[in-house]
Image: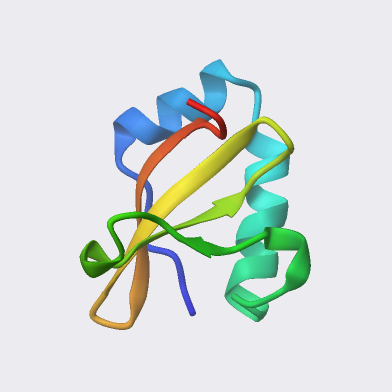
Length: 81
């Protein structure tokens, strides 16, 4: 499953948190196999909204929704926020 291009605000967040290399690595991993155990993919609450997240590193996660068969990143935030 491909990931849509990131919104400029999210690109700035990735740069601000120095996550460029880590994000690119998990992006490739996600696009090859979205269910890879290293991504720690999870469906967030409330489940009916169908918003998922995957791990960028131990501290940060990317929240996304599936739109037209592609993953659209909605936010990048601290895991236990």
